[in-house]
Structures are given as structure tokens and as C-alpha cells.
Image 1 (cartoon, rainbow, N blue to C red):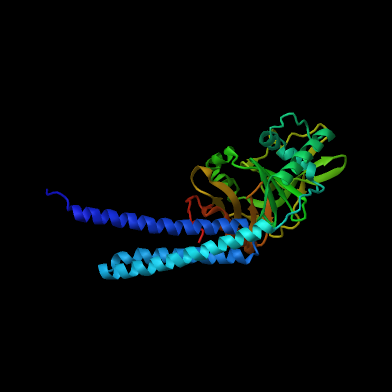
Image 2: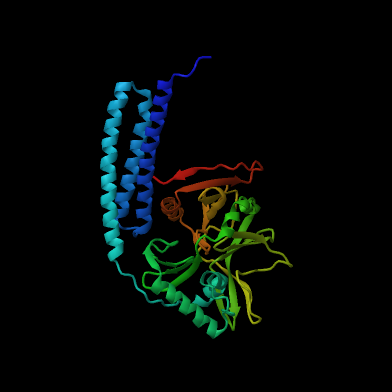
Amino acid sequence: MGEPNKSKVFEDGATKVKNDLCFETIRNVRERSVKIRRGVPVDSPLRTSAAAISKRAKEIEQEYRQLVSLSDSEQAAGEANINQKLGQLQGAMADLEVQSLATTGSKSFPQTVSYGSNYLEKFRKHVEQIRRTTGKKEIGKVSSAQSQEQIKKLIEEIVMTGETRQQRYMAIADALWSRKGNAIVIRQSNGEFVTFLEAGFMCRTLMGRLKGQFRELLGQTVTSLARVALVQDNDLSPLMDTLLFTCSNGRKFELLVEQDTVRLEELSPTNDLFASFELEPSEQLTPRPCTEVSRIPQTIVSLTEIWAGSGETEFLVAISFWDSDKNHIVSVCTESDEAELMINLEELWQRVDDMIFSYGTLSHQLYTSTGDLQNTAVRLLAS
């Protein structure tokens, strides 16, 4: 066998470097586009412009890939044309970044924090994360007035001294995200406390092992949906991170959403209703029906799990349930640490579109009750 043609090898190597540089430029433009869309309000025209630039970058990438089938002279002309388009696109991207910086940098957000009626429930759910991210391990039980004041002081300190941005949180399109270190405080646009999150919480990397856990509900006729509610001193507070499925055969399943996991457990005499926090001696749990769900009773014949991200950091963001005629029964959004009911399918698809911008990749896992439980994954990439 003769020696390889050195000039040919050099040409191939130079072509590869050139191709890699082009694709890297396109990838960089699209990543910067996603960053802008994450940092501006959902109704901002900058978000629309960023999406258009990302779409144009994808079109240029497809044009570049088609050059391989052309003659050398046609390739040269095509490359010159594409380089010109890429230069224009990078200029437009730079202009958009300047506009985005001017918009987000000049906007002032309220630095005050107010608290709704269920703030104690949220404090109890997140107290361990608050201790861990702030280093204040001395915070005691949330039932203590002193502990409540400590938590409020820490939340307000994060808002005052952390970095604040405005972007969607679940159904709140203009939510305020304040971050200091790994501690994140979510507020309404008027400053009302919504929840506390921990950035990069590692337990979430284990969620991939929970794929398919909702198959327990396949073939079940659900007769009612309810929230688990906390009862104390004749006061009933529904826990929005829970959902209780009651079936016609007497079986009951409780769904619990936390920042690091989504659990579905069948209840029994030895495994009764549960919450994400430890109960006080004077408290108990009871079901509270979800009256907004009208398409019950229904038999669940198929379901779709929607997962965001990829690899070990994949996590569950929504579950949809379907009847035998492929009609939508109800969906549950688990994107954060609440179980958000979605009756309208269009509302779910709108949320999924927003998730694509935020996470880049979504996969759909479809399960049916026919016995042949084949998983189908559909990858949706941000454009």
C-alpha cells in the first residue's frame, strides 16, 4: 500500500478546521440568542428578535452542509456567500446584546418582599435548603416566631444584595429571580414571595432513574383528584406540591413534587398521606378535592412524561394523561416544586414551547396500557 497523498491529507485537514470554525461560530450565535431569551421578559420584542437570529443561524448551517455536494468552484462561491451572511448575523447579534444589556441593566426591580397567606408552608418545605445555602444551620423549627424572622431576614438579604433578573417561573411570566451564591428567591413582580430554590442541587441528577414510574396509573379509572391539605386549628391549607389520585378499585396514589425529585407512591394503611415536611403534633393531613377538573372519572389508557435536559441532569417537567380516544384528561406541570394542574392542553403546549427556550432539549416518553410499553423519545432542540 502506497503512502497517503500528503497534499490531500493537508486539504482534508484544512477543510475540517474550516468546517469546525463555521459550525462553532453558528453554535456561538445560537447560544447567545438563548441567553438573551432567558434574560428578558416573555413579551419583550428582544426575545422575538433573538429567536429570529437563532432561526437564521440554523438556516445558514443547513446551507453550509449542502455545499459538500457542489463542485469546487461552486463551493468556493457558496463559502464566500455564507461567510458574508455569518458576518452580518454576528453584527446583528452584537447589536441585540447591546440592546438587551441596556434594557435589563437600566430596569429597577422592587427590593421589598411581602408574604402571602401560605408562606409558612413554603418556609417549612424549604427550610433545609435555606440552612444549607446560607450556612445558617442554627435556624430552628419554622413554628418558632424567631425562626420565621430569621428566614425572612435571609430572604430579604438575598433580594437586596443578590443579582435579580426577570423571567418566567411556571405560570408567572414576569417573575423576579434573585440569586446570591446557590440561594435563589422567586417573587411576583410586585415583590410577593413565591418560593426558595437551590441552584445546582445534585439530587436532581438521580431523577432519570424514576422514568416510567407513572405507569402504575395505566389502566386505572381515576374517580377523583385532590390536593393533600394541612389541617391545624380548624384551618385547612392545600399543599400545592401534592396531587392525590383515587381510583375506582379503591387504590390511591399520591404525587409529591420537590425541587430535587418527583415521587408517585401508592397509599396503604401503613403508608398514608404524606407531605414534604415533618408535621407538628397538632397537625394532620386530609384530601381536598380539585373541583376544577371536569373530565373525571376517566380511565388512563396512555400517558406522556416530558423530560428536560439530557444525560444525568435530566429531570421531569410535565406528565399528560390520555383516555382511550386519545383525548386529553389532565396534565401536571412539575417544572419547579409545585404540581401545577393544566386542564387546557393548549396551555401545556405553550409552556412546553417556553421550556424549549429555557432548557434547549426536551424528550417525550410515551407509555400505553396495551402491555407493549415502548418508550418513544422525541428530541426538541431550541431553534
